[in-house]
Length: 285
Ligand code: NAD
Image 1: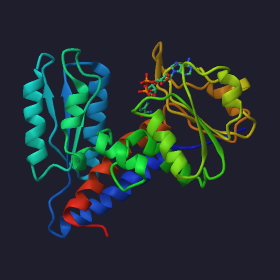
Image 2: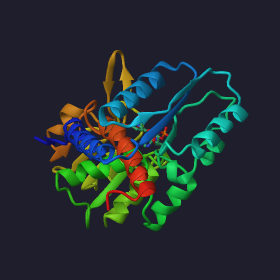
Image 3: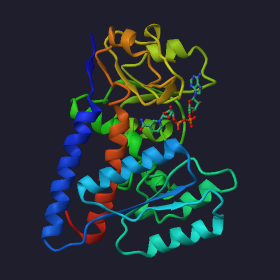
């Protein structure tokens, strides 16, 4: 029976540590770190995510400079807002909540964020730094997965890691981080032949697809570590990409949904904001 990789508990611990750190900086006379979350329109899922991010910021002592814009806001206006935030000394992180309405060019907006304020780690400069193994802001979800493995002393070195999903948000950067930690990495995707056989060869299996219960026990090597990034709404329940109960019976470690990677993602956003603040103010060295 697999043990739980408890992302919720680790997220709480990390947020407490960040809060202490920030309180220390502020009591030493520094300004607080600042994060701006830009949200466009009224997508209820996005609104819930943004609210959660802002609440977490408040707990940690990060000042929020977020803006909520109407769904018909135009590209030029949004670019102007990003330019202002790039120039604002109080802001260490900027995040554009995705998805954006069709008429907006999301990639152009993400690319406009100053790389050193790119709290989501999605700017080409930061993806390039990741590829080169240089310090920089890392994408929150992949970094959250790595931090959770580290917490439970699961060392990817020499292991076969299979990442199902090749998005720029999760699959690709996570594969790079696992490679950096000396795993042998396979990226599987919608065109992979015999996904079950590929998945079954994994010591560390990550599912980042967005399909409820895609990963069934026949796809899991007994004793494997299983990380479920997926979030799928089934009726009024949130489920992952892994058939949790049956896979738990054969894996060694498993992340639950909810309570696994979700809380880690938010926490890494706060971590990135504080990291970027420390770089700018020459703190924390
Ligand atoms: P995406 O749609 O951009 O990418 C999905 C990937 O899955 C693609 O690369 C595709 O090739 C692959 N895929 C699709 N069908 C497949 C199949 N049948 N077999 C194998 N591979 C298949 O999605 P994303 O942004 O990477 O997100 C993936 C999931 O992770 C979603 O459920 C999303 O909600 C969730 N997510 C969770 C968090 C979190 O904090 N926990 C953060 C980001 C994304």
